[in-house]
Amino acid sequence: MQSQLDSVLMINENNWQIQRGLDECQHTFEILVDAFLHVQDGVIQPQLITIAKVKDMMKEESLPDGLDLPSFPSLELSRLITPVIFSKDTYLVYVLQIPLLQSTVYQLYKMQPFPIKQQDNVFVYIETKKDFIFVDAMRHKYCKMNYQDLQDCLTSNEFNYVCQKTLPILTYIPNEDCETTLIHPSTNSLPNMVCEQGLLYLDHTYWIPSHLSNELLYVTPKTEVFTVLCGSSKFQLTFQNRGRLYLPPRYKGYSTHSTLYALYILVQNNSKDVVLPLAPVDLDCCLTEYERDQLHKIPLQKPVTNIVFCRRIESRQCED
Image (cartoon, rainbow, N blue to C red; front, side, top):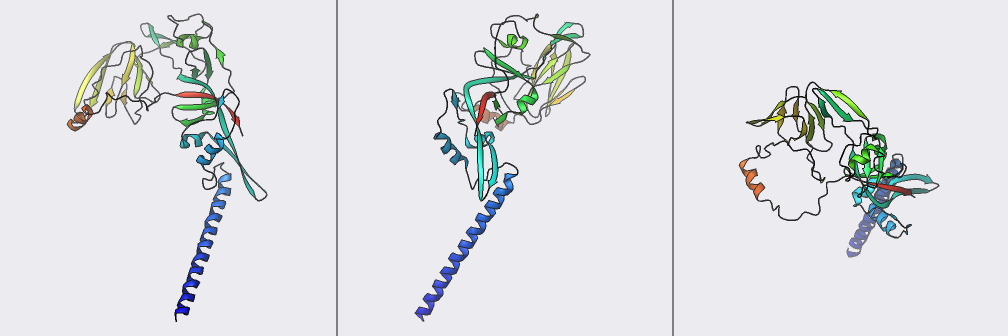
């Protein structure tokens, strides 16, 4: 009887191992099928090669002087890798194009004409030929690019661009280029000789939304009364000439011809102090009593070193 029981247990154990082997074969087959399907979309199959494995391979590479492999977190690094995947005989081949970064980091600026009043309803503004300009920290090197050039860059996150070095990097020469002269810290007057100007006729306030911000620039030909609503609270502002306005969430603003309100963007920036004064909107009017109490408990005196709100652009070269 005992021998029969042992035989049954052995058979069951063998059956379980066989079933386990079949399940593992099925799972491996499904991974391979998914991998071949993802080849068409250029997607890396994570069960075959992981970002951690890619990082280990990157550490073993020796690079030319002045070039570095990207040191981004795994998720951001995965957005910079361009895989070339194909099948060869019985092999699935992965060729990973990883950008090599130069040491220079550039700051990217959106060039936005901001009219200034000349007389009555006539305003003058500086015309720009490109949408963006990026400069190094010393403002000695620069390059201009349009929106399509920026779209061709890789983005590790919403504040960082990694661009292939196809556009020429130029050296700043005083009073030779309009935008670079304006942005250079040594400039103290408008370089009229190199800047092309245009005229704009305005009958009412002209609003310019800021990118990734709840701020708006405004230019008004006459005194504009602006009403701000926040729940049951209501107050009015008076705008003249030009300036900037910040509208937090739950605020709505009404002017003679416009209705303004924040949708969802809640991003600060780390730029230096701006010349334009900020309209005095009471930012705490929409807070409840509990929220106000919690706000005062926030330890703002603690140094914050892990928050960066800047947009960075890096030149790159691709290597297989």
